[in-house]
Length: 307
Image (tube, rainbow, N blue to C red; front, top):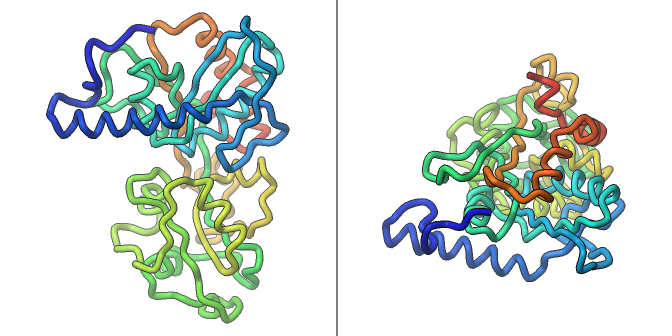
């Protein structure tokens, strides 16, 4: 991989920008302390990954990504490592897309998972982006919520605004609704706003969770809670939750393909224009027919199948 010209001048030249970039890189370097290779039977919602037998002959590929992209990349890494014993794929701690791209440009990782295309401020002319798949988002509740299977736009907005606060108002049990939410700059919240919530303020009583895995785990253990996250993750992990229809439409691949359900984010990867041979081989696998089938079998929609 080619090296950056100087320092940490990733997004700009101002002192504040350099300080921000240093913080991003610092957090990524801390994440590297917990690097591990893929070796698990089922992808998990947490960052824990079990190490495989190390070998001095193994080629190491380091991957970082936003929490929304890690699940699919771990699936592909597991399949690739099963066929290529001389390759060890390591993941750093989940970060936002911007942080992963910054790590890539500083040669900390080889591949960055991103939920957005490369922004002009991020592009140093040495990296490239390609979309891999669509990941449907669903709105779901804890399994204890009964009698509520569908929400209209109006109802969902009222829940997030704090105007509907009890499941009984929607035909459910008499219990307060606990809203689990994501930060405003996260892809899931942006899509919720685009398709259902609009720009109205979210209730101050909402519980804000920085990572999608944290939201998923919290929803499973918190009675009467509601939140939005990846459909594929719920399928892969067979999560015991209640998936809700929105405006009478179920969050399914079929409904997305037909245009009835639109809330889906893009999953893509960013890598160096001159990658190492081992990194290039893995990327070729990611976009191969076998990689496409892995995506389809786990609830993702390969971009190649909808172009």
